[in-house]
Amino acid sequence: MNREHLEAELRAALVEHGLKFAPSGLSQGTSGNLSVRWHDGEAEGMLITPSGVDYTRLRPQDLCFLRLDDASGTQWRGPLKPSSEWRFHRDIYCARPDVGAVLHAHPTHATALAVQRRPMPAFHYMVAVAGGRDIRCAPYATYGTEELSRNALEALAGRRACLLANHGMITVAADLSAAFALGVEVEELARQYLLALATGTPVVLPDDEMDRVLEAFKSYGANAQKKAAADGGAD
Image (cartoon, rainbow, N blue to C red; front, side, top):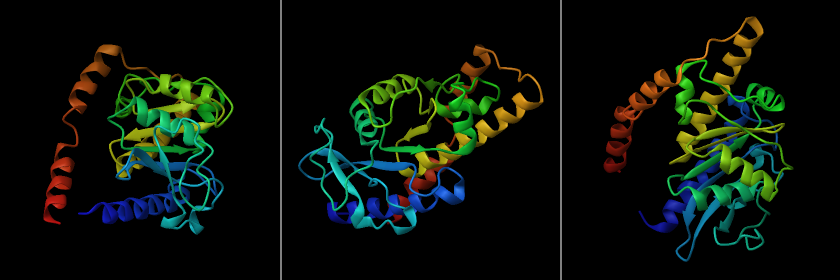
């Protein structure tokens, strides 16, 4: 597949997943943003959703390309300016070579925890889906700032998801589908945790049990990975 075809597919996928924001409950209207890592043939960068555009009106050509070596975020390419949260997308890609896609959203239950600045402990073994024994909540900072980006990177250290205090959530993954699926999973965990808090005191699993779960998760989804590889090879 040539570079032009691959870029067109990635742009279409970003639009497709943006349209899923509202039905999935992850975000409404123009809130939330998505990006994928992309090399334009000259430099490593990212394709990212633009600022303030309703996802029902978003077109593939509306997406922005921003080089990762552009620390100012001023050299973007596209008809519309990139999301106001471009900075932590860029900084995550620079710090995490394992990450191929970033999702940021404001889902109801995860945000309800975030406004209490409450991390999500191991009340359920599936918390390990985010890569660790808990899901951290990054300290508050104004949106779009370097401080917010630093806080998010710290909360994501060794993790694939975090909450942002008084703000929302971030999930990262190797590809866009995985980042989106993780966002849905984190929001469902947040809903369950809030219900547990409302009806009693959740029992938190011990560290050694979570370590066993994390080890088991290393091979979890192997069938899905094989299927994806097989499907890709069939093209």
